[in-house]
Image (cartoon, rainbow, N blue to C red):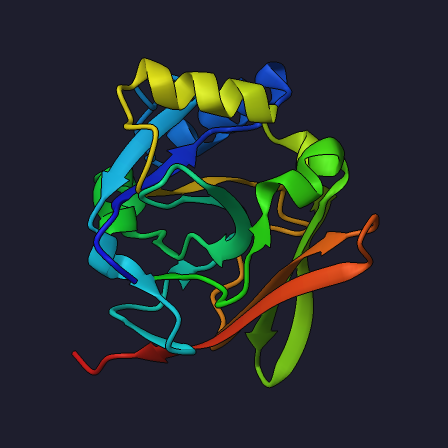
Length: 209
């Protein structure tokens, strides 16, 4: 993948009341409050990974399924799925650093934005975590739980993001039963209109320290 501007949007829940409740919950365990809701995190593009395996330090990292926008140099927009793998232990020090230290897996397949534009809110995001040898359901919800597409684009413009040559992880959906720090992660995005799915799976290898 050629060099692109790379960003993750955090605290992107559509229900602002629930999002702020989540902020308060995280503050209780030491995670600093974001400067804004939603929040934009500028990351290094070398983190974007489709190797099928990532390496991490520590036992408190986890993936999150996200709908991903890819814009090429000509301004053409595409949609795929990725995982905002994050160091949860480091989050209490800096959310930005906790994202920068982990690779961000992304699927190799993508859809033209026009193909899913009219069903954006109805696209389904889901994920599972490999925990103690078993795949455990981790997330399952529609993109309608994330801020609307138009708001995402306005947010990027407000933050002076160029209108081409970028990758943006646009936000995740709620966890079903809290964080699980597993040995693998798989996720997908499903279009009922096209009856198609883009899936992503990767191993999580813990480095010796």
